[in-house]
Length: 201
Image (cartoon, rainbow, N blue to C red; front, top):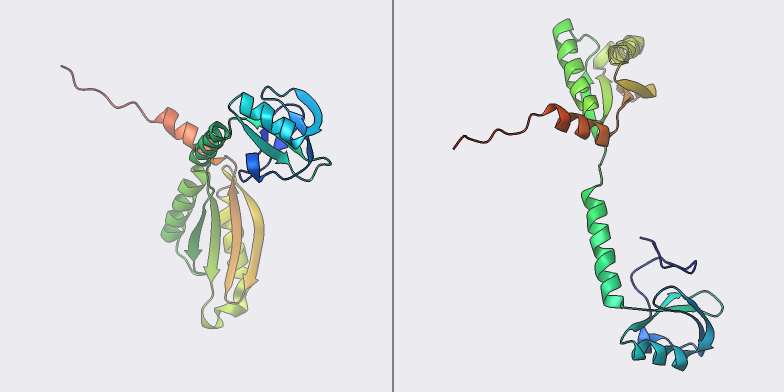
């Protein structure tokens, strides 16, 4: 998590040296409003922070001299924690769903698998499509490749082939990536879902 604290200085993590933990003889000081106060002795910076009932926080320990800022550290920690919580809430994770077939799959089962894959892709997820070869069927792996390509062609309107069919052991797999993002899928779903009706009083 990064936070621009004005004056061209960026705080990059939560754990900082504050107040009495700072041991440097002199530091470059930034005021509570982002103003540059120059290089000053540590005690002068501590006195300035104390006079404002605020904390002195080292925000760039590797600078020469180290950079410290006067701030309400407790308030900063609270705001950063809130931002991280909001970011996690708004994060959309793309899942990988798997569809499995056999080289001799019939038309009905193929359509069912294709319908399931379309549903996953319409929700913004990726789909791994696999063909399992049993026994001597492995000698005819080209049939599995043709099956996978036909499957991908049937979903061209909603997906792109991210990884071409590849044989690994007795499985041949490919990956399909949705043409719409998770956020777009969610927005579309919300737009198509009618609001719940309230009972008449």
